[in-house]
Every structure is written in structure tokens, then in C-alpha cells.
Length: 451
Image 1: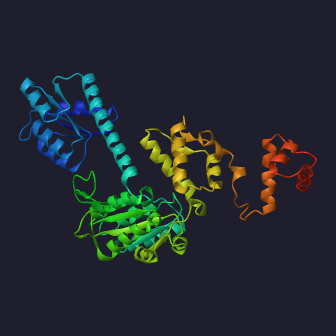
Image 2: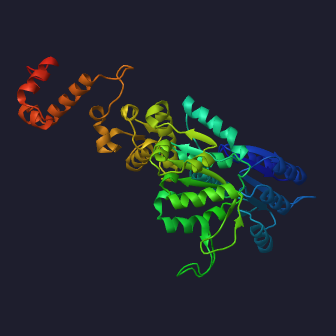
Image 3: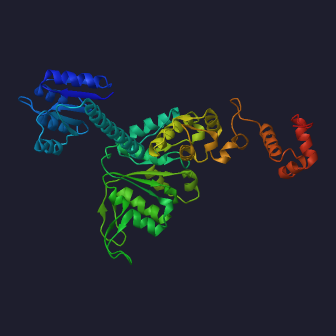
């Protein structure tokens, strides 16, 4: 319900406007005093203000100016019995929505107030939409109800202000970079830069240039000085993703920066001091990488002051529906759609899926569902085709226990038979066994006489 303030020192005119607009469903506040009107707009927000122009002590122009200063989204309509072109122009310059002359027509008042209120409503909706998009695109949100994840967040929140280096491990798509952002935004460096780089995406020379920068003339094409990411992150945090993919030479250079808190640009001779917190991550097992000699143990210890291991989504099934609904809201806002539900059969499929791509894969599935859904709910038809055949393809617990190899083999045999229309000769060929062996297995399963 829009809230209106009506200001007029003529009691009859005030009552008439109040009666007209209250019948339109607006919440109405009235006053005959311009001074009181100034106080009201200071204390409260009004969607629309209707004010008489000429009043003693405080006139409509002063109320207009104060209302727009205090609440820029408020719309003000000036009403006057002494209309002049000059006063109308002055009112519009101060931001008035409309200028109505007395005696006014009731339909005109209704129409102008409705248009002003609609403009305010649209501005509010657009402002809310922009805020939601900014939140989804920029705010660090880690959505979970898993106790393991909540414990990890508690640890991350504890270590964030300490400024020590952090090493994050976990499969691709589990949210390692999100944890790095979480640590940065809860640290004393939150107002400083957060820089990130995927170390596996660059060859050694290019990675050195990206991290350390270069001096003018360092190589052909180096026409000016370039700061590297380490230097640019000074006073903030540098996130090194896939750090185990660094070459041994680059690992030595990074180790020196961490130890000495200084760097030398490519082609440079002078050391430059840097103040950087390092958060590193990898989906490879660090101990395996150290064991096979591809990752330096001393660098590992320098980075692993605090270690966090993010579990895969398959180990925190309780988060699947929670995350799914979060992504529905996110992409409904970004795509300007009104999708609010996920079909129960979709949730069942998602709950039984092992998510090799983890949270990133779930987000992609829901984004696709929002994009393809013609209604207000995501249904099975909007899921990827391979996900619809989930029951056969996943290994999962049955009634709280892990299925035996025999049970899993039986499920696979029935799936193959269904796919080939119960042609046992063809099924045996696909299974890599003879027809007699297939018959024995079916007999044991109680299916030898038919389906």
C-alpha cells in the first residue's frame, strides 16, 4: 500500500483530497501546517507527497525541496489555485512530478497520483533487482547446513584475522575459491585487493610475467613497466589456484617471495617489498605431489600454516536441496524469471546423484533448468538427458547401506536388458558373457522365465 502525505492549509480541500485518495486504497497522512509537513518528511518515508503551493511560513516549494533531499525516490505533486508558468517551471526544476491547478478534476488527481505511485514502485523494484544481482554476483555466500562445512567455516572465520597463509584442498567445483574470498573478506585485509590466478593455465614464462610483472625493455614488446599480481595484491590477498601445477623453478621464486616478503620483476635488478597474504588451493593430493617430486615440501609448509579440506558434494547430501533452491533464486533474478519451485522428482534425482563436478555442476544444472523452464517450477524435462537415467548409473546407498557387488551387478544386467528390449543374445554380447551365463544369473535373480 502506497503511503501519501497531503499538505493543504485549507481544511475543506484537505478533507476532499483525503476522501478521494483513501477510497483508492492509499495510506493517508494529512496536515494543514507546512512546518509540520517538513517534520513529517524528515521522520517518515512517503511514496507521494501532495502539497499546496502557497501556505503561510512554509510553502510547497520548501516541502518539495526537503522531501527530495531527504528521500530522492519520493514523488511530489504541487497543487495551487494561483498557477503561473514561472512557478510551474520552478517546481519542475526542483523535481516535482506534476503540477495541478485548482479547481482540480477528481479523475486528474487520481490519475496523476497513480502515475506517481507507479513510478515510485518501479524505481523500488529496479533498485531491489540491482541489489539482488549485485549480491549474487559479488557477495561471498557459502550456503550450507552440513556440520562439516559449518565447522570449516568456523575455522576459516577464526584464522581470517590472523593473516597467516592458508592451503585449501578439495575436488574441482567444491568452492575453494569461495573459501578464499570468505577468508579475505573476514580479514584485516578486507579493504585491500583480492587477486586470483589459476597457476595451471599459464606456461612458466607467462606465469612469471603474470605474477612478478616486468620492467620496461625486459623482452621484445615490453614497452612499459607492468606490475604483477603479487605486487598488485600488496596490502591484500593473492589466491593461487591449482598451485601444484607450478613448475619447480616458479615454486622456488614463490618460496623466496613468501620468505623475504619482496620480489624482483622480470628483467629487473632491484627487490620490491610486498605485503601479501597467500591463500593457495589445488584439487590434487598435496602429499602425492610431494611424494613424486612435483611439489616442494618446503613450499607446502610455508603455505600450509592452516589447512582446509573441502568435502565433495556427495559427502554432504543435505546441502543439495538447499543449494538448488539458492541457485533457483539466483538465476531467476539474473534471468528476470519467476521460478520458485523444484519438482519433487527432480529433487529425488539430484539427491541420488554423485555430482562429480560438485557444487559447480549442480549450479550448471539449475541454471539450465531456470533457462528452459516455461513455468514457475523446474521439472525433469529441463534436466540434462544423462541425469534422467540416474537410477542405473550411480552407485549409492540402499536403505542406509552400501549395496553388494552382486546387487549392483543385478541392477546393471536389468538395465542392459531393458535397453535392448530384453533381447538376451544381444544383452549377453554387450555384457561380455555367453547366453548360458546370462541365463544362470537371471535364474538366480528370479528372472529366468521372463521379465
